[in-house]
Length: 170
Image 1 (cartoon, rainbow, N blue to C red):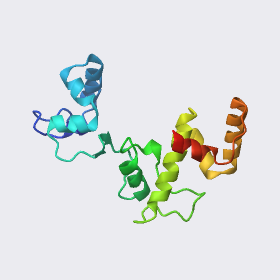
Image 2: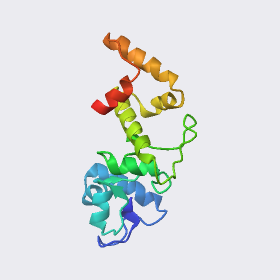
Image 3: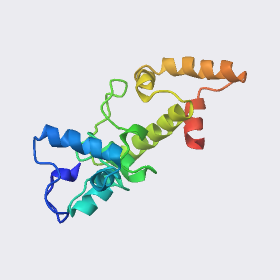
Image 4: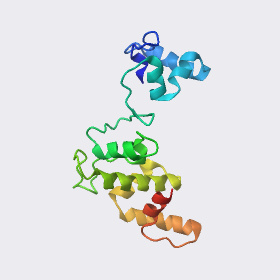
């Protein structure tokens, strides 16, 4: 967060390395004080209020720890997802199941981002934890087990494309 930037708001809210002040700022959130409201509205709003010139966000969503400069597919996800810089809707990182994928290539990222966005939309729709769903990407045979579970739950046969189709419908 940009509370350490000395913008036009009246100085730094958080001097570098000051843990006590950081904890007090978190407490300000709970109090809904002026400072708490400034930092509680997300990085874009906070940065604008503090007069910060460069705020790393896409569509108001602060960048996560996944830098799109090196993870081009994640950058495509940030640019095309409804949430902006939301790494949970399609973080395109190296994967053993797809050793040919080059996350820093300047081309070919669209299909990877599109697949991941539809896959994670399906996972979200099922109420499943994103982290619990990652092995299904590494071991595609496991997807059949998840589809079988959903099929059993709803008493309806589902085809092998169920997750992809669900993600596009979500």
